Length: 412
Image (cartoon, rainbow, N blue to C red):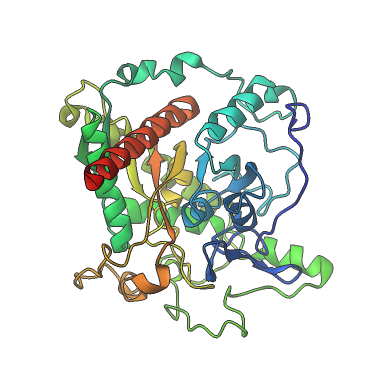
């Protein structure tokens, strides 16, 4: 389909073993480093693609996302991406982990260093009528009406909500500054911005992660045993010499010991997920009373990850991204700024939500992260690819205009 659209695929990029890591490391090709600082991770699982596109080795790439695998490397590498809803873009024939697991589906999406790449890619694929090649794809043509934000007041003004933190892991200072910058830019452009209090965030995360391990790890073991490849249990290799930030990731504490769940137990998880989706939908709809537009919040802005790129093997955070996979919200990532040691001073210690939140707080080192990209995510509704792309363009324009005005003011 990419060939038919005129694309010239010329390279394959690195991924982690099993694809289910927020890092990129495997036994065959080794580790992918962040193009801004080789001591730091490029993220994962689409970290190889993120590094290549960030270095201008390709104008656009394709990655996958089941828990943040498009958005984490895009945030770490200063890129734009779109995590579409289930079955909006084709996936048939793509190599996948957890094949047959359709409770929370993996999706394909673009990664690009240009905001225009999102629309170009998504529209080209949808215009190719992918439902004729993939039986799961929704038969929904590209809608210029939705792109022009017909269901969002035509785009003027929009009301965004900012989730300053998710109640699980508090973001590092550069992420906070990026959200403040984005709020100021949007308000200067005439849009409204309100606060978003996280709704049942930890319950949603626990449900998702329990679904992912419902087979007790059998999929990973089976795939690795076919070639005799050793199963990687940590993204920290002996050569890196890092101490893990926590002895036991908080997700393991939430989910408990992995075991093979019965069909009935999995159905119960599915039922719980449906209830959580309905609860989150109702919570979103109720914001109509706070927006001042007569509509619920048009989109939610939040960190994609609690921190900029971190040292290899230390990325444990998918607490912000997994929400969107579980709720099936169309979501983009856009770059905002970069880490600045003069601006991003450590926050005073707060009352930590859990032991991993404390470990993440202690991980912050503005000197090590200096110059690294800082990106945020925009969360839209299910099957709102056109609208999310357009709203991301509006945010990007507002940020660039605000930067231009501030630069002119500083030079006077």
